[in-house]
Length: 219
Image (cartoon, rainbow, N blue to C red):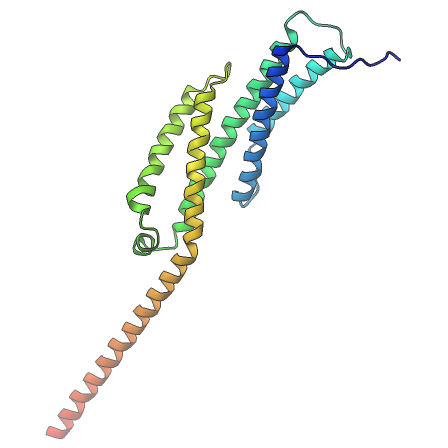
C-alpha cells in the first residue's frame, strides 16, 4: 500500500476552501434557525441538493489530491472548488429566501386572531412602520434574487439579503414578544364588552319593569 502523503493546497485553493467553509457554516446556522421557526421542520429540498453538489465537488478535489484518481489537468482543483463555492452560494440564497417566506407567513398567522385595535394598542409601530416595511423588503428580495448570478458570487448582494432577513427575524421576535400583551388586551376588552352588555341588559330590564309597575299603579 502506498504511503499517504499530507494534503497540500496552494494559496488560491486554500482561500477558496476557507471562503466555502465559512459560507457553509453560515448556511448551517440558517438551516438550524429555520427549523426553529418552521413548525413542520421542513427542509427545502433545493438547499440540500446544492449542499450535496458542493460536497461532491469537494470530494473530487480530495480524490485527486489523495491520488485516488488520476491526476487531472492544471487548474482542475481551483475550478472544481469554484463550483463547490457556487453551490454553497446558491444554498445560502435559497436558505435566506426560505426563511423570509416562513417569517412572513408566521407574522400573518400570529396576528390573524387579533383585532386591528389590539394590534395598534399593543404594537404601536405595527401599522406605521412594520406593515409598510414588509412589502418593501419583499420587493427588494425579488430584485436581489433576479440579480443573482449562479456563475459568480456577489458578496454585497448576499450580505444585503442576509440583512433583510435579519430585519424580518427581528420583527418576528417583536411580534412574538407582544403576543402576551395582545392576549391580555383582547381578554380585557372582551370582559369590558360583556360587562357593558350585562349592564345594558339590566338597565333595559329594570326600565321595563318600572314602566310595568307604573302602569299597574295608574290603573
